[in-house]
Length: 245
Picture 1: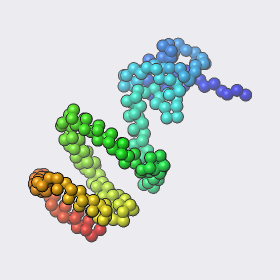
Picture 2 (picture 1 turned 180 degrees about the vertical axis):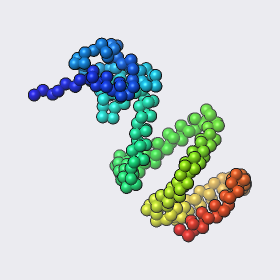
Picture 3 (picture 1 turned 30 degrees about the horizontal axis):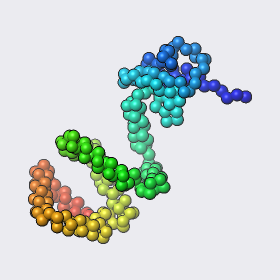
Picture 4 (picture 1 turned 180 degrees about the horizontal axis):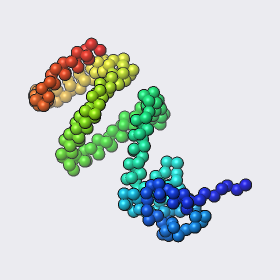
């Protein structure tokens, strides 16, 4: 018995209804002009208008109905849809599932690249550095905007979930304990020595460096304390917890 032929015409009509795509054409012919039983190859190209209004040219039926296919959506809407699915999947995952997924990712990266994360690769680090330097040169105010956006995002997330920061701190401490045997990486002998040697090298290259650091640090502390008068007490409580840990 021969393999059953897929009815792509009917499937495309259903997909267009599902993705809210319009003006769907196959080989420059409106899909409504085709008989539903008419045979078309999966390599056939389609043209359609995405839900956002963008006209998408030459998208094959194979791409539309692939396992992780983008359907009758433009690249932008397809990415948005994919990101939402991933976000919902992560939200519904238990901590055990998240840990298992992270471990699998780490093992895959180690097998392929020899590192836990691709961002640890020398060539990736250099590419990120070069890209940031180029963007910052074109837009000098970019670093300040990024910092401000990060601060506002963290503030909003902490307002939505007051216990969020405690959870992050606990996760960080657990990770450090597992990797280094300490609650913070700066407690390890290797990191302490690295910091010490780096400071000695930098101070020898710039004799005013230490004075400038102290001055900048004090200016930053004064500014932060003005914004949050209760900050010194919060730091003291955190320090006591850190030292007792």
